[in-house]
Length: 331
Image 1 (tube, rainbow, N blue to C red):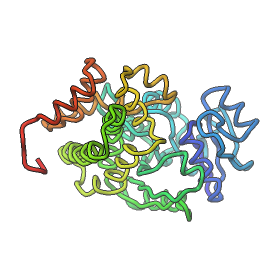
Image 2 (cartoon, rainbow, N blue to C red):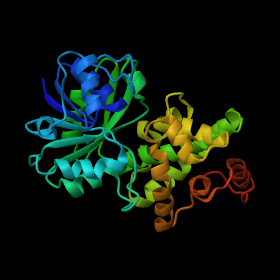
Image 3 (cartoon, rainbow, N blue to C red):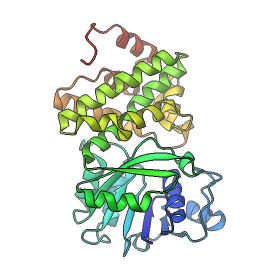
Image 4 (cartoon, helix red, strand yellow):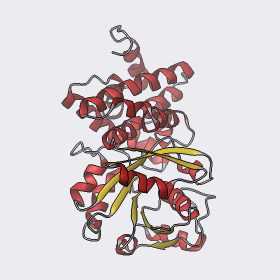
């Protein structure tokens, strides 16, 4: 049995707390907001973000970050990407040398173009970081539906340790040492999912979505390899696997926000209606800047940025993509 602190009590933090406690670990769930803390104390459930997923009475709750962090065998970071740096900064003096932090957060920091583990290492250099990603939604993990996922760390030993803690009969975990590839795939799939949702909102069909998924993974792979990631990572769980589920699922907040934009909403209106952080909006601009930095062509990402930040209509963006210069596949 391990002692684990889960930092963040949204849908993912709640689902992972459920999984880890069911695996027999001692779990402490940290909540930032008073109302969420009181909700868990009363109901053992996130009735707003993940209704129906009851946590074991063995799970403890706290608003004291030190209580959640100090002395834990593992820390799980499950806060939204816009606040990951500030959360890590608040944790920095509490984390021991070599303490493992595995992040569930996906994204690229807009101001620095850094992946989430790099942001954590900036603020907590003494930590040992890892990332958990793949085709998974909290709504299904919390119901115990079969899920496969990958954990990436700098060394195989750390990845294998985390794998053992998380793996269960309904949650199969693979390992990788390509942290960059796993995180690039995790972040950029949200941008492509926005585009897939827009296509749905416009009333386009399966052909359009298949095209976006296929050409989307081509763009993601192109950038990831240019940055130094391994090509094969993007054809695994954290690449094409995560992209498929995020573009197609009713649980996907990015797809839902894109759907609303396809029906005419601006992104801020769509985000308000989704009522959760839409990571793709934050990653889109960073992805576009990375494409420029590494000299990589990413036409879908470019059009998504024009829709989000320049007022371009989704229908015009699709027209532009369809009428680009003809090429061989794979280019």
